[in-house]
Amino acid sequence: MSVVTCEKLDGGVTLITLNRPAAANAMSRAMRAELALALADADGDEHVGAIIVTGAGDRAFSAGLDLRELGSDDNALAEVATDDPRLNPAAAVDDCVTPVIGAINGVCVTGALEVALACDMLIAANTARFADTHAKVGLLPVWGLSQRLARVVGPGRARELSLSGRFIDATTAERWGLINHVVAGDALIDFAVALGRDIAANGRAAIVPNKGLMKSGFALALGDALTHERSVGAAYNVHVTPAMLEARRKALTGK
Image 1 (cartoon, rainbow, N blue to C red):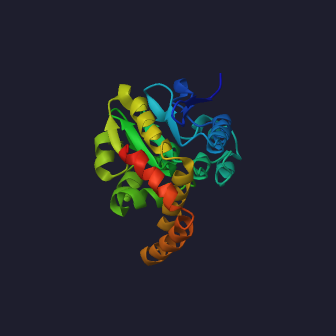
Image 2: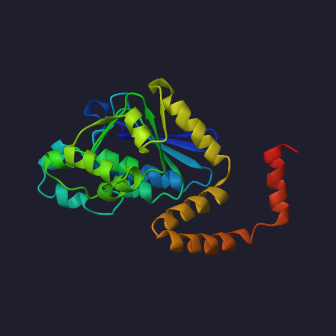
Image 3: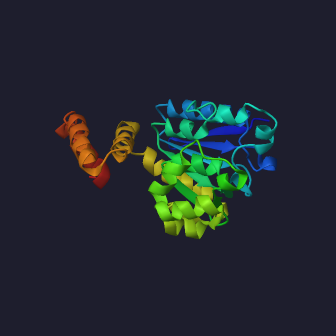
């Protein structure tokens, strides 16, 4: 049985599922390698406008790295400290130019939270819970959690999560800005697919550069980011003809 499944849905959406439910979808080497391949395949498909990543079952999105595997290999911890997407699933998500939606169906812990933070947006089941347990197991993050989490929820809340190891529920995660929406568990995938189809309907020619502009600008100070936006936006928009705009206007208004 494949530890990652991939389904191409109507409307330009690809659904990728972490598929080790008996192990709380813990991310083994095999799973990380398969996830990287699935993401790269979907990202390279011109007909795909949105990618959804979720976990099998309703218990866990993922419990993070497979600690049993880590504990049986002296080289495992050094191996994961890389930006190689075959070993680092947060890098595999971050490498995607296509928008990635995380559909968090259950517990999302530590390494899995790092993967979730690399997604462009998160939808969570009302039973989902989130935690960073690096401190509890005596490790430091290497997939971006120490930097991304504070940028999303603020430094105080990031320190609370990471230094205490406490879980927060989906309602708190939404209130903190960690996730976009909380929905009933049985509605999670339908909600994520509907959102993905709305994104994909705008076409990759518009989606990919818009995502790229937001991502590149976010890494800059605000003044530099505004200059960057004007430069990149003007260079892109000069190729948009009046006829193209009129066709879009008619499509939007139905006239």
